[in-house]
Image 1: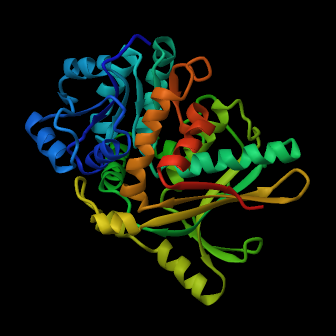
Image 2: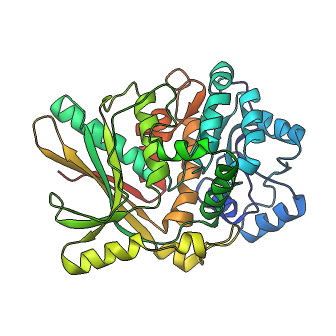
Length: 389
């Protein structure tokens, strides 16, 4: 890539999550050449001052309705971080600009139908231009995608073979999902009303892996008691997108986890009547559909900083030995941790990932950045990856 003016541009820096990303970069990565981008220079300046960023932080005016402004933005930077969603409404013009300019791109997308389209329309052009387009770089799906990758790397090193059946289980979580997640879900449902085939994409765990029809997968859609874990488990709301991303990662890694790989995600609630009651409460929770958070709004600083999550990944090796890995994170998942994860993902692409090892294309995080991103997340973003046994 020819020399660019900036290492990173944060597009959507005046929004709630974009502001957190910009604040994090200003506080933790002062040596990086970065800029804030959005529709209004006045609002960008206001946010810059509010978050305590240097007064000379560059401000770029760009809007998804003005392709020329996005072309100009993409041509100036090595990588773009975008928090402007729902992506199916506002995302494609920026992807197109980055692909044209050979610029790396990371987003927070959890919209399978839009991702399906982006893979179909931009994977080949991105491979030709050298742009690395990496989707889903927040709580959906970094801890889950890299958590499975981390477990499988350890299993292969220990036994010489991957684990064919992995359970992803949320053990603890305090925090909220973002208003952008709720808005994205609503837009997906609207689109499905006009395009019935989208329902099939949402149901198909391999819909982000063109040309591959893998084995039947566990559904994770009902409350169950798991004898091997001695716990009740409830459906997990992010499983729909996370499972698809993990199967795409497996495919992009030349099926390192095996072509027979099976995976599901659920929320562990503990044993006994209390665990069963908690599981049923989670399964019957309709707050995301009936009273969703609004885009642009989010938890207080105290709520963000006191949040946390702990996810485990477990399965049997080819020798019948149980292996378990975990990913835990400081701060609430939807905002505090997500803003740090996407920032580090953008920096990882800009500085750590060789283009010979990771050429252009539309990616998920594990095949795009793998161990390099795990290292960054542990050093800077408050995540811990562990092999527990």
